[in-house]
Length: 628
Image 1 (spheres, one colour):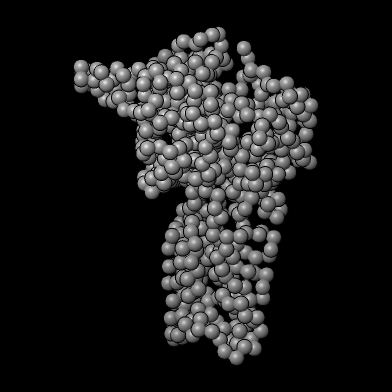
Image 2 (tube, helix red, strand yellow; image 1 turned 90 degrees about the vertical axis):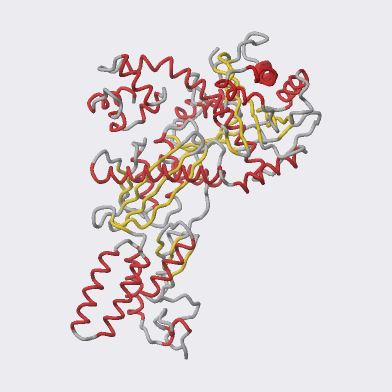
């Protein structure tokens, strides 16, 4: 039976306007779980409830949506702006979200003042008349840059009212870190000359500035003005220290933001290379969550408004790795954010700009690997999470081994149970298993009976493993080791009903006293334990709560991938063989190279496809055209 939305939702769908705007998906607790924008609200919102829409994220969202709110806007650009602001405010659970949503440090030059101060700030206001530079990776980096630049271009940091009438200067004048305009040693014009030089360096025009200073130093030396030459020499050295991380990466004078993307099953990493004056002046990484089921281009498209809504200055050109929809709308929005100055979005396919994208992509991949490794090796965080879970659930010991079971059903049939294993807070993927559910008590899907079958099969394998492990050949022992070890916590994706089934199965195997058990419900992330009517709540932002949710989400993801693979296998052969020049041998080579993932083949670059034996550039282009 094909999917049909609830009657209350269908009434909303039937009465949606065709205007541009923003839509908000609401769950039964009144929480906003997804926010999106649309050129045509009627068409876009209705697409989520079409039976043919089998995206994993959409399937999960539909289970929770009980209401839809819309906000009609005057234009698509206004809808984009409103969407970015609402996502930042509500952080819905199904939107692609900048995970590390901290405020990055900037350098602000308070140019609206007669004698501008230069400071670090984490608050950016594009309309306050000041100049902002950044973002930078850390406050430490900003302080290092400012310390060096101050030796080249002394500037104010004090709160004095500068009128040149003070009786004495502060210590910074004595150590040559301030020109003392407070006592009239430096007039306003000379002070602004310093500030303009400093801003040129921050803008990335370092080579130009150094060339001018070098010429000036040599001229002073030829005129035997050695004091002036020494001052300029020190200024050059200070600028070089301040910009030691800058290096030529693009054409002279190029001002660009270059964006790369890498992803794995749980998250994505956006890499931003900030190029000014042809120099790489900043390289920042942005981890994103809630990316499951989204294609790469959509992830990039969702990230751009979140980032550029808060930046201080825009480049004239942004380089992206993928074509995105509605580039004209995004460019129009960027122009509004940039006070009417045009910002062009480019997706380079060849040449130097394409090489910059490749560098950003490679860096994103390295940063993603580092981020994942840091999290998985963060022993203190994992220990904290396990201790919090132990305390909240009154476990006899920290749950160093957690097994989680989830049930996934496609159109009321083809039911799959997944088991994932986390050891000391990190996934043990070699021990993940799937169960194709074979017996259902009655027609149609039954999650309770499916869970009963999966758990019964799991613990029957435990019994078989401990009884027969001595009789197994060596090559079979490791495979059964995963069944022979009992979990420190058996986690069930579900509430009281699913938990009751698990209790019955453990009782049947006489294991209830040996296997701690809990069920994690989706609505409020409440945790149910056997023989207790009220749920247990871990603090929402605690490490323990996050770990339980991550384990549950991983079990759900693992189950969903089975259905995705089944759907892909059915259509894969026909879609590939429909491409002229692709026969059984080349189809097999493509599927092998991309792990049977048709979407990976579709997303792959021409160069990557050409790496597959037998695939020429002409054929690769034909594959891209056919699959897109």
